Image (cartoon, rainbow, N blue to C red; front, side, top):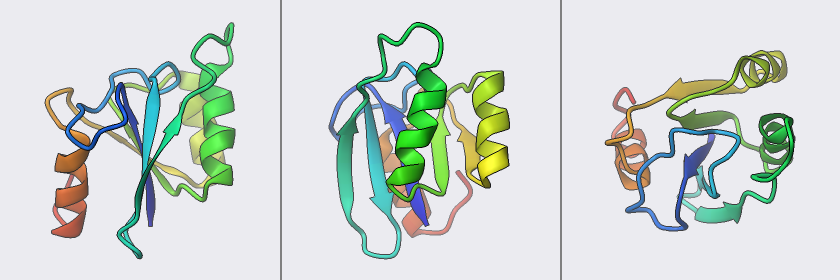
Length: 108
């Protein structure tokens, strides 16, 4: 499983961002290899399709699960159509919290 987590900073201590399409960074975590990386969201200033462009970017990276505080309706439909799971979490959760919960196989 490969997670794409919306965040405002390229740090595992950063909180999960509330805005999927307009967050500054995505942490990409591969549960199979344990590899953690960060990808800059270059679509933050797109007029109205930032979320759609982000979904396409994350799909190319092999992401199978996305994590954020909130998702737009178009993005939700697109993710479901591509078979990508979405998880809504509270702002109090950090990237590291999600990684640790995934390692322990706990519910996010």
